Image (cartoon, rainbow, N blue to C red; front, side, top):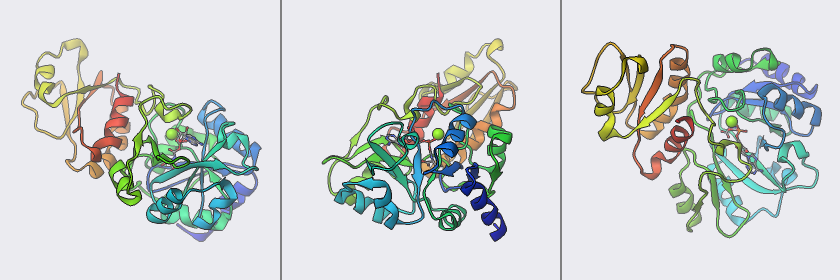
Length: 317
Ligand code: TXA
Ligand code: MG
């Protein structure tokens, strides 16, 4: 990444434009979080409902208090432990935070991303950048600059290309306002890791946490219908596949017994981190190939798989 690209991006942001940039999780669609006109463009570009709040991205921890109030000890501890990194903290908003950022709520989501390009951009910009994932509303988050182009085309003024995102799934979102932290969206920083640091149990919010757009059922979906099938039922499912349901793509961590010309098989990794890294890009590529269905072998029920399981559930019918 050249300095001149960062300079160009910063100029566009100060003028109220949109810049897509890489983070370690997924690409973000960034705008000046203090500029309502710029924020409006985010919603237009994504075709996202205006009342869905945006995460504010910061360069360093000292900026928290410009955006949030009543910052709990838990919040500080998590921030110091996991930032920069794939964690978003929900806090009580500071007075001046624009309503378009908070979706008219009394809270604000903050995160310091751990990607050299995001860091360079945020440092050079100086302020907070509101940045949702750089996809159209309801679609899979982009993990490459190419995917951002596909999603948003001319609706974004400039794209910083930082290669493929290392984590591949969106950040863990945790509400740290109360005595008991609440996970609103699982991510690759797990409930267990948060409990270990805070030395207390965390609550896992069930599916429809209010006002978290990532918790709408139809979220993170490819256009090809996606079906989740339990490991033990996968071969029977494939055996009974009708001609009209074919061809299909199958993503599994285990070998398939049934193989034929109607089944395009992709081996997925056994480590949740690697699986998460590959998932969106794999779905995005498969989505272009005209399969009748994408069939995915369900993943384990254990905590390390929470984030992957959550996204698969949302994407399936
Ligand atoms: O990894 C990520 O978090 C990526 C990268 C770009 O940082 N961003 C991302 O943003 O996933 P987005 O907008 O696609 O998803 C953020 C989620 C949304 O579901 C939004 O509703 C929720 O965070 N959110 C943001 N602010 C919130 C708040 N104050 N209270 C509750 N939920 C909030
Ligand atoms: Mg998103």
